[in-house]
Image (cartoon, rainbow, N blue to C red; front, side, top):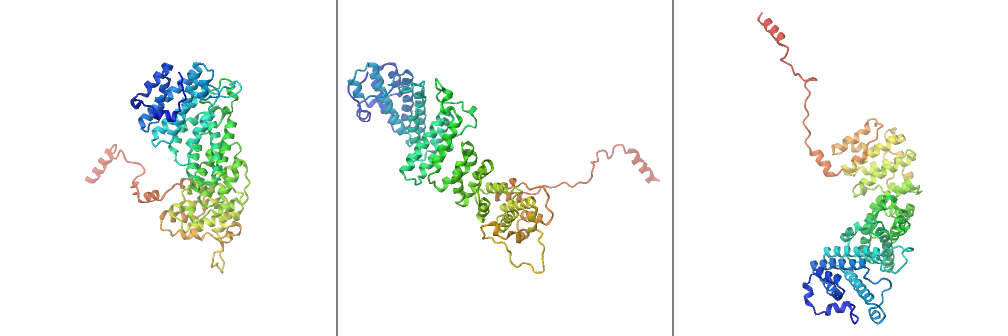
Length: 532
């Protein structure tokens, strides 16, 4: 039965005189409470155990509370509707059962508050247990709602609980990447994923506006970790797993619609990216932009502003923005004026040493594959790469030289760089302007690829051999540079140091197997001739 006076959890749990509760078994307490309502007050003992700072005791208490309140939800022994104050419930005209339901519902809310606090526990195992317990509460509340609504016209889902949980996971002071990876398994369920995306958007808007849009590295890192764990379905048939199945109109529920998921996904990312990010975060976002974000947006072209701004930053961020821009240009007809001019200016000595070198040259190869590009542009790219090759490491040269050869194969007009006729007044200086940002004004067409001739004397035999290929007519078949993009200095050295396999010397086209067979008569004849 409900107590005769108001009992404040925060003070009463501390003031209880039953020290023996520290040694009690939480499961036995739960069993007694569920067996008889006369043990209702024992729930305070359980909540006291829940506040333990010891790892094992806290986990046992969390599991016990999960069992208790999920069972009470299933039995409908928690108050449904607007929860009255406990003093009001005692004064009002409520039945004994109603007072019990109100009392237990208040204890349920206190339990959730304590478990939410455990999400900040120093032990990860306690955090994980708290997370799983809250998700079990969410599932039970969805199946047995505590709101008194007409569920024939509304959909049952514990949005408030999910929103509070997401807000706790997205801490501003603690890196929760490990806990968020554990939360990923719940994001496989369509309804959880749908409402979590909405909760992320609300959290980002609230937190970033309160901070006046200034970067919050820890918070934004948590947000990104959670968003990047969201695996979006590709078609409607993949939306088949739900934490809660609606009794009526399930097929009309927004959480079951792929277009609604795409819209929520799009709003979430746009909300996150409209605020200033730490430089390292730009890179992490751009790495997954082309394959994990753009394909699942209802309107990918909304990312144009973010990608163009990132492309203008320069350095590695510009290199990574190429992937997303390529998707928009190739699949969504993005018209980007000065695209090749910016790509041309990305060719700097540092491009051979960045982490994303392979990705950059792969995309540059795709962008320059069109045979409709003007000759001056292709020649400028070939000449700039040749000039940069003079100071490039051998691993980069084994990419750059075939890259230049492919440009010459695709655009025969570029052969003027190789077969430039000489006159009596040979040029003393190269007319090519390396510092010119506009490829049309670089005077590359008036120059030649003398840099490749220089590389023929390179100390590395592979580089020298590749550079000498230009002395002979290039075959029509293009070189596959994808095989060379990932080569490292270590692999190149290992290949050079590897002992060449001993080659067998061919002595005869057909191996003799019957040298002394069937030749007896011939040997006898020769023997007789010798005697004569």
